[in-house]
Every structure is written in C-alpha cells, then in structure tokens.
Figure (spheres, helix red, strand yellow):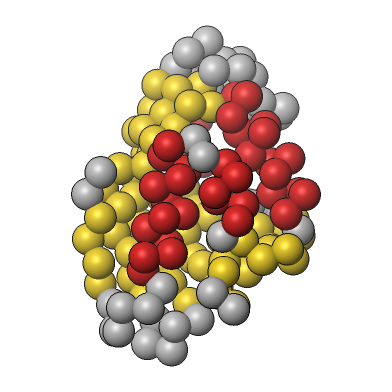
Length: 142
C-alpha cells in the first residue's frame, strides 16, 4: 500500500494512516478505536448515521456483502488539524446482495472514492464517503 502525504504540519496523518491500514487489514476493532463515540457517518449518496453502534452495524453489512481493499491512498490535512481528506481507489468484490442493489454473484469492481474527515480530541468525529454509484452499478452489471 502506498500512502502519499500532503500536509501542513504532520499531526493527524499517522492516525489516519492507521485507520486505513486497519481497514485494509480487516481490523475493525482498531478502526472503531479511532472514532469518537458520537461519530457521524455520512453515507455515500444517502443519509447520516450517528454513533459507534451504527457504524459497527454498517461495517458488519459491508463485510457481509463486499470484500474491499483501498489502494493508492493520498491523504490531505487541513492547516488547523481538525479536517482531512483522503482519495483512493476501491478494489472490491460483490459477495452477497445488498438491500436495494443488484444481485451479487462475485462481480469485481475498481472505482475511485474519497473521504472527508473531521477530527476532535485525536479521533475521527465525522466520516463522509463519496464514490460514483452509477459507475459501481455499471461495473457490477446493473
């Protein structure tokens, strides 16, 4: 995994690196430990969920339906240390049909994605995800 750092000064990047390394390693408990209890998760092209419990349930669904690895991660940090962004490619396999989406049969996909993060007290307090859903649907044959 290659991580390119763009920052002013290096404060948050090690924690964000750890978060994405934990994601790729499937270490969900490590990921959760880097979130505030009241974390807000803004879903791609959808609503928001609040709290570790909601994020835990989201990740359980994701792990059941998808096998994903993030590649070519580039992290940007804001000058005041409270906001960051990450851009990466998502390489995945659609394992089980997710509610409201096409039937899964092991389709693979590679899509660019981004995340915006707000940080408070050394942890992630907001995580906003974005990827092109129409491109994902095209790749899985919808």
